[in-house]
Each structure stands twice: as structure tokens, then as C-alpha cells.
Length: 117
Image (tube, rainbow, N blue to C red; front, side, top):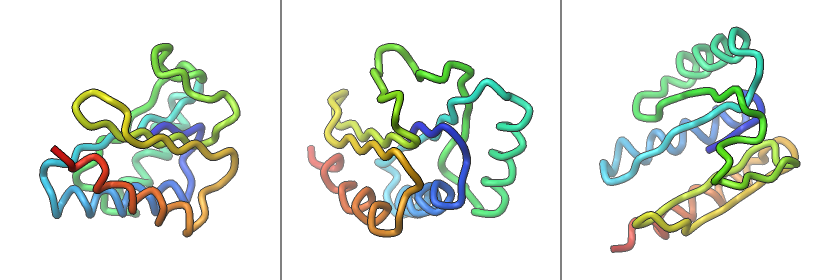
């Protein structure tokens, strides 16, 4: 997951993914906040980890607002969720605004797509 900022909807999504990883150790995930403000972002990530009781998902940050160059993330997306299976992107969700509960459910509903062998 790549996000431009930590938010309550992002925390909700990360918690749901974290819970799924707790149920199935084949799953892996990470969160990258794209921000130039390392101090503020670090504080937000610590708060997100503590308040959401995140146990399995590393929360990280990157100082490049465009994200990793090879990932070709949309510059308009506030949150991008990519899911891989065998080094191929199987799911790609990008959202311009805050995530809704319906969108979070749609993302988590796609998890079985990456569990196929």
C-alpha cells in the first residue's frame, strides 16, 4: 500500500489486512507513506501502529512523492493498493480521496486473488 498521508481510513484498511495476515501466514504486506516530512510522517506511523494494534504489517515512509520509479504510481492517487502473486500484479486499486468502508471491503475481497497457486 502506498499513501500520501496516514489517515483513519488507511488505518482501518491496514488493520483489516493485518488481521488477514494473522489468519494466513502466506500473506505479506507493507505500507509506504510518500512524504517529504520525515518527522511528521514518523509520528503519524507510530500513532497508527499503536492505535490500530498493527502486528504484521511494516509501516514505512519514502521521501519521493512519486513513489518508487518502477511502480508508476498515479500522481493523483491518495492511496494505491497493489497485490502481487508470483511477481505479477494481480490487483491494483488507486483512490484519489479518502477510502470509504465499501472500498476497503472491495480491497480485502480481492485478497483471494493473490492466494491462488
